[in-house]
Every structure is written in C-alpha cells, then in structure tokens.
Image (cartoon, rainbow, N blue to C red; front, side, top):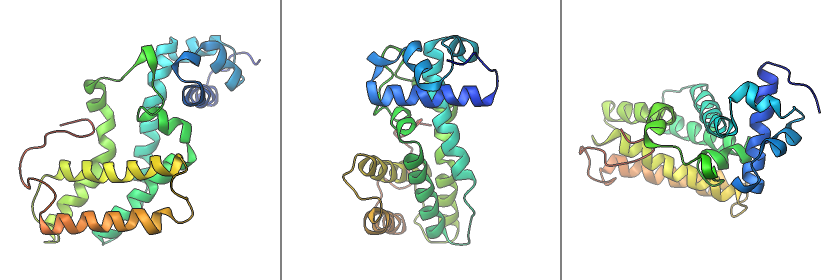
Amino acid sequence: MNDVVPGADTRTALLEAASRVLAEQGPQGFSTRNVAAGSGVSKMGVYTHFGSLGGLAHAVVDEGFRRLAERMAAVERTGSVREDVVALALAFVEHARESPHLYRVMFGAAPLGQFGPITQDEMKAGRAGTLDEIVALNERGVALGLFVPGSAWRRATQWFSAVHGYAMLELSGYIRAEDGPEKILLPLLDGMLAGFAAGVDGESGSEDSGGLGQR
C-alpha cells in the first residue's frame, strides 16, 4: 500500500475505487479499508482528501456530474437542433459506458446507504446544470419555429428520461451497445422532437412540476 500522495491522481484513484465498491458491493461494503485496497492508497488518504467516508461518498456523485457536464459542454455545436440533441445524447451515453460504476452511483442505481440519498438542495446546487444545454436547444428550436412554445425544463427532463433510461438498459445488458443507439435511441429522440414540434409533450407553456434538480 502506498503512502498518501497529495494531488489529483490520488484523489481520482480514490473516487474510482469508491465508485467500484459502491456499485459492486453496495453500501454494506463501502469502507475505508475496501476503498483503500481498491485504489492502492493508504486508508489515511480518504481522510486527507475527503475528510470522512461520507465526504467521499458525496464526492463520488459530484465527480460523476462534473465529468458529465464537462463532456456535454465539449460537444461541438452545429446549425441543426436535431443533430445537437443527438450529439449530446450520445455524449451522455459515452459517459455511462466509460464510467459504468460511477454512473450507477450518480443516479442511485448503487445506493449510498447511510451517506445518502442526496437532498433536493444538493441536486439543485449543481446536478441540474447537466440539462442546461438541452434547455438552450429547446429555446433555439422555438425561436426557429421548429417547436411549439412549451416548458423548456420539462422537455429537457423528458430528454433526460429517454437517454438515461437507454443508458441504464445498455449497461445492464438488455440492449447491445453496437446497434442500440441507431436502432433504439435515435428513433426515440426523433419521436420526442416530433412531439415538441406538434406540442404534444405535456402542458405546453405551463410551469414545471418536477424533474432532475427541479427548478
């Protein structure tokens, strides 16, 4: 076991190990000993970098959403609302594929046990920002006359529901990764956009009633 080495590499190793422990063993297996064993860092590293085991658990969730927001922000924008919606969805799915343990913890598929769940205030503080790109695309679609005016946040939550549901099914092996996006996810998104264009996506124009990090 290595001594604690301050820095980003040690922190990342602990976050990755913690997400694996939570996803594979559940909260009952989430301990400083197991995280340290999986990271190659001494147990003291947890306290040095996160203050406590609970601090590490919540940092795992924060890290997942930080990476997701960073990946979505990096997607190159085109002049097409449809193409951008698809590109952001594929970036979302790639995040789930590349960090499956972390992804499951982010969205509660691997629970945090005594250290969770995260509160609505915590959700509003940063998690909701991952959908801001979809809100902006809806507003662009309305401005171009492609969509009927409606609740941008509700539509973003509908997008999230579709893409997250697809990602979880793929991670669970119910959908084959090699053909799932083309045969399942993209047609689903096209149907969703058709609903936005026709105004059949709910109570268009009314106030939002829920969603990821409700606003």
